[in-house]
Length: 57
Image (tube, rainbow, N blue to C red; front, side, top):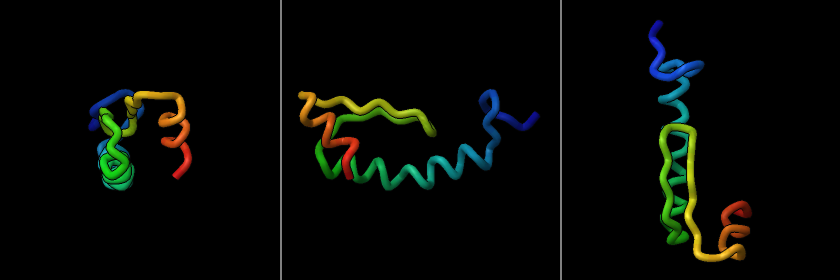
């Protein structure tokens, strides 16, 4: 009851969005295309070198 997705409560979904807002801003700053829904994310890059840079802040 009170769950939007299996195993995820509303407070945890809300906190995920708040905390990952910084990730969104950093990916935008770096010019990466990405798609994020709550705590799941896909980042699209043009090369493996760019992908390696995504994991190194």
